[in-house]
Length: 489
Image 1 (cartoon, helix red, strand yellow):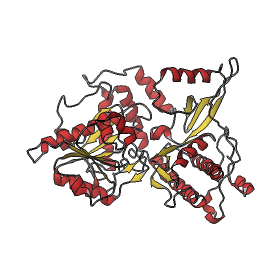
Image 2 (cartoon, rainbow, N blue to C red; image 1 turned 180 degrees about the vertical axis):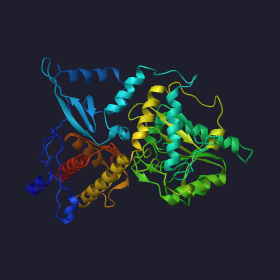
Image 3 (tube, rainbow, N blue to C red; image 1 turned 30 degrees about the horizontal axis):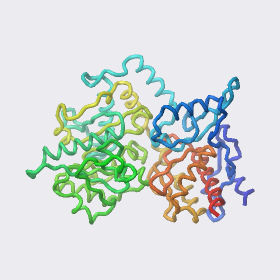
């Protein structure tokens, strides 16, 4: 078994350029055996680096000065290229520097859609930094307007927010409008405020509409407003009381919507595909029912597409090609918009924009010329046919490999197998405690993976991922599951 598995896995060392690998689809799944090339840990975490090494000094500095809100492995990343990340090894003073390569199959938590250290982004960032980085929102800057215009034009081209694919733009309006912020959390915070303001402006009832609705397993951010619609006790409990009048529904439960979304509700926020919550897709019929109920009571519908939007699921917006009766009033975005430079935005229908006036919201850094110029460029790259074709191809490959893994590891993986869309994919395991173990085992073999929810492995590689890189990640995953199976005996 081991010999045949080794023949099927890559024979290359981790530090060489990727070699071509035959595709598994040519062999019957019944004859497949898991890849066992990576049973031994090649990338152990630096738990106790030599005390006189630079790595030890850096880790000590973090421990002494940085608030411990994250549990991190003993690695300090220094640079990257494409899907590769490098951590400095703990060498002693006077010794030459050495670096350890990792395959980043997390894309910085679905952020680096174009990979690390993209040369064109680096060039643009340098050019703009020499011209203008920040001027505040007391004045216009040329790149904020250009970026938003591209965002609007692309939504017309690809569909979304009530627009069919290819809908013409109107130079005289009314048009979609955007508010540019600094993060996904800030985008959601703004969207919740806009929903309450718009609902108050357009309310048919004399009482003020203030209710907000979210759904179980959602993740919308950690500021007080966004946290209030992130119904996870682990995140919420230490900071209560939160924003009031928030109700939590069950995703895909249509029957509960009349009692959930009532006349006093101002806004409903949901993820078309929940990311952090376990890569759980909302059903089309459910989205249509939510849209219909929001129309009935005059509530504003917000889609949080911070993780599933901007071509990660194959289309510009996750809802772009859905029927118009499943479209939202606002869509929030952030992660890939500037490929790692901090930015967030809310794009909204004209009638929502008309309810927002001067002074209703603001930001010091949002919409700055540096990050908006980068985002303008990134949007163009993300929409290229070649990249979208690559997303489709790598998605099919990833689902195929994960489907085979589901068959090979029926004792560890849930029979439902992989779920998601495009390059936002989850694989649920039977034992929740195994998820963190698999993430750690993969990291110790040079591949960075993510968890999601309580029981799911999450795969969100850069949209530029190559066939060989998907195969490498899956080979390592198979070896990690073999090790886990042995440990679980």
